[in-house]
Image: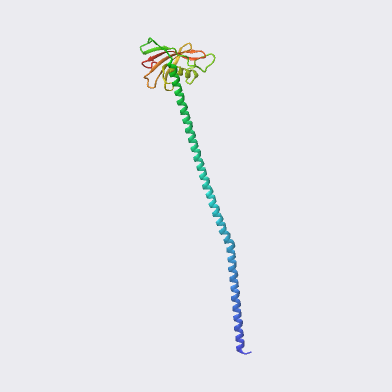
Length: 227
């Protein structure tokens, strides 16, 4: 074999070896790149989906919380408004009832005094400007059985005594100042009352009538409160 043929064969072999090495390297690089792409697609895609799902879930939770807070605030608002409306209605009803009761008491006193025939009496002292009696009727009572006068504030006797005094004097029961209520004898009381500014001052004598209540018997108009 000649030297030229031997050199040519060696060159061909070297070129084939280099080509094989290059192909092998490219195959390895291609395999590595493929593995990287597959891994990124599998794990990276899952992470992205998880992030997207987490973001979606967070938005839904925030929206639900916002709606819940809005509903709670709205509910509280409506509850407060309803409570305020209920309180206002109750106050208005109470005020209306009080006005009706006051008007009724004043009307009863006026009606009771329309048929009263007054008889003038001699004043019993220097502080008495005027004295008179009249044909007053007993005021009526809710008490039954044997009667013992109860002078405590708020007792049924005090309530009925105030009503009888208002009838005899013409003062409004709800606008009358009571200075003194005391014993005036057996089943009798005396009461000193006035209007709020003490320009009208009265001493009223009353007697108890069984099953009919307190009956005014005499009224004295006073110059000043003398209790």
